[in-house]
Image (cartoon, rainbow, N blue to C red; front, side):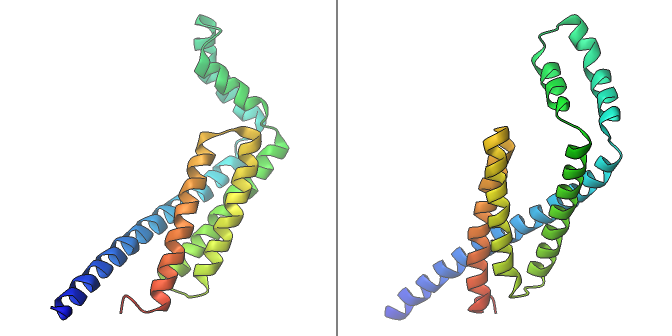
Length: 171
């Protein structure tokens, strides 16, 4: 009877570890995809100077604002574009490309199960969270809250995965 209880308990633990492992793998895959999009976005942003952005904004909003000067979405687009200057462009290009490259390197190392990558990823995500909270205090973007929550979940999953890999749970 005791042996059956132990087997049942081990089965529950293995199932829990497998769910955590799959969640970690999905999260890492999403981080990898996100990093690629960030790098592409940063590269595309090199070509979007303030003058070009202004032309695009006028093209997108002129018709709607001529019919309804209080249109919420069109006014939001215009207002959002006003802060885009050369300095903001350079910062955004640097931020997107460097953030994307860092995440892609970390994801690659995690997929290869490099032990140093787990604590490095946790540290990097913690730094990203601090920066995202700082940006949220200025921009109040719900997207930043979502990214921060996702990064917190990834820190937890990365820590748990690190413990399991370190203890050779998957072998």
